[in-house]
Image 1 (cartoon, rainbow, N blue to C red):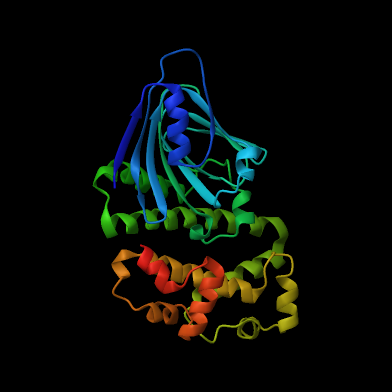
Image 2 (cartoon, helix red, strand yellow):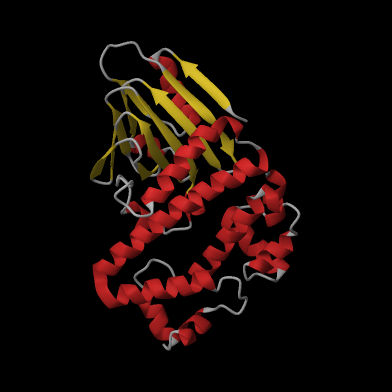
Length: 309
């Protein structure tokens, strides 16, 4: 449900932003009167909020991170005014039309030195479908007109901000999920480019294999053995190649299949599709096995997830 919450005192603002997002420390800048508004909605697992406020500083401290909130990413699209985002030893100035991603599981600081408006998407990290370690290299990096995909992503998100009061129901949830997917595509492109420049042929081979896996997820015969055969290498060589990525090929296949299933089960426009059909769609045709591995990954059965939407 779309909500608008307006406050005219900084003490109220501190409570509001911590309840709307994750626990945060907020500090005013200067002694001028303060006003702030948070408007938006929770659309499925994606919170879509527009924030407009006077100058202030927001900090996500080590102590707040240690409190144990669920791992989430936040994407900010600057709509008006300027913001400074700091995380992971990097900092970037966000100008209108630029966006950046940051991780609620690591400390960050945002500084707004004047009145501003920004669109914030907050969502579970798994929904992005990218390795958290790779995304960590892109936090506090501005994307906008200088990035080819950024030129397409930012207008879409800006339109989403304008549509917020009308977003509701299945269409709103799908648009919010699409926004995360589109932003994820931009980030994936940047990750691929950086990796390709970083370590030459080995990384290019890993990326090619990851792309192959993505393209063949619906095939129930997709296994580490079939991946190795398709790339004319032994299974041992494949495991060695992926040894430094932080996950095995089998884990990658299983994780990506489950993420696709999770996304489809959350989609209200697919509520008519049987749970078993969704598992089969992504290479998990055995209903009992699908339910077992899904529960192990997400703590509930596929049917329970659908009923909770």
